[in-house]
Length: 444
Image: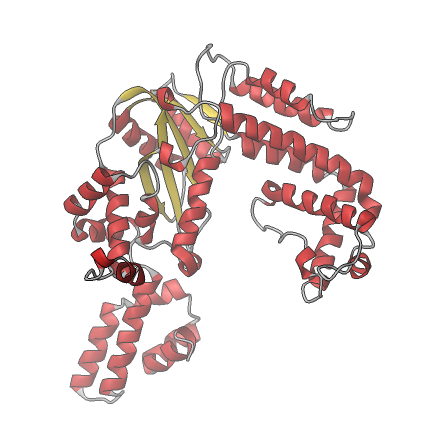
């Protein structure tokens, strides 16, 4: 940024803000959007989802849009939405979801529809909220249903299991080869049936290469054949799986662009009619048609709800990117910076955020909602090690007093519990705390 200022003569005397300053600006915008007064209306649609676990925490997020402001014939964008609620929690349960829905309703008015996945805690929490708000409809996430229905088919398919095993073996062998660019997609440990599309697409592409490809400087087809000689044996199944993927993708795209409405099932049947389907694919089509019919039941002509949580999952991707390496250890105050991308951001919002939100408010929210981060603990540990080096491990009362003071500051018992040190190391810690920290924590 400093280079940009130097290039433009009018800004030659400007100084680029530090990364800390920029982080604070983003946090203020995120906090402002979270706490600002919301429009009260009777047509709110709320989307709820929980992030994957980061450390021992999950992020429970509530975003929404009024039915009257739903875009037509296009998917939702993050800046279409309004940030309604955010909780960072160690455990997620139905009671928490119900309570947060009550708080959300009190700030926005009537919740006409809630869209979420079908997790047991999520469903139970929404049902409990419907006891006090019976007109609120619950629409399940179409993308998750499509993936789960596909999972039910593929897990019973022996050819699929063998195909996955062969793919994994080939991936290991190809990683350090000259054709590593043809590697199959990395397997996902969680929600692995949500990315079947990319694996089937890879298999289809490889079949084309094996059938019609000619070696060139870019790729050696003969070497590819040595690694994937098994793939043509699954040709018939790959074509079948590809048709299943096309059906699922059609359902997701339809709901993504049109939302959920009273004749969405009919629109889906019309959309898949263009796919060449056989008897094997029809049960999958029927399952999705039935699901869409149930979700749109009792909807009136002209009504439209959100039928997918993909927009919130897109945000979680941004959040993971913002947190960077910290994601393995838990959330930090950067979660507020990520919130800044939800909803419209214009000059007035930025101005109001930076001028009205204080650092004290940011710090207070972080302490209350997230607690002490791993990074903060590391800084305290480093300080404690410096104290130990400075005073030495002698028996003088002055040194002992300073060491004990440092131990209290980092809350030794809590640290032991969090780091799950074995009893042996806990005992040794009492004798030589510095050595433990350097060897087991700091990685010296």
